[in-house]
Image (tube, rainbow, N blue to C red):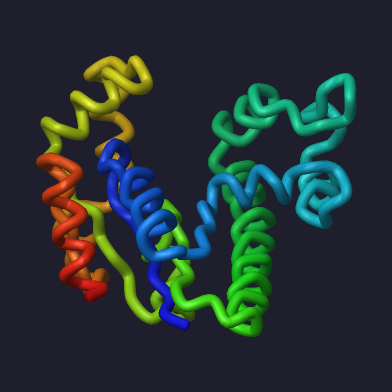
Length: 194
């Protein structure tokens, strides 16, 4: 089984690439953010640990984690954010390792993980290679304005918090330029996987 980690800045168009890998290469996909949301549902150890750490104030009337209330707690205080990350990230990584093993057993040929913190969380230690999806900043800004309605100020603020282009390139074995048409991007992917 070949394992790839996909990363890149916000608005780089990673989902287009994930969809292509799934459709054309029958890749088994995990999007770390979606997996984290799944693990934060009642019945998962991650949910229990978060409620234990932050109390029932972060829950809605049905007992689910209220995203707004939870964000309000963890983003108002660096220590709370550190605690939340120290609970969520290891749980996500453990689940990814479990699924990686299951897919290997099932005979899956291509396993793809997309995660914002791929480099910071040292996924290069468990995956064959990391891919950096590079997209020109102006193109990323345009995409974020169109798809999410973000302001220039919000886009700048998010981009400043992410790794630099140099840092992404230093850690990733493959760089895919997704600044132009999707077809141009797909040709690059086919070349790498061909």
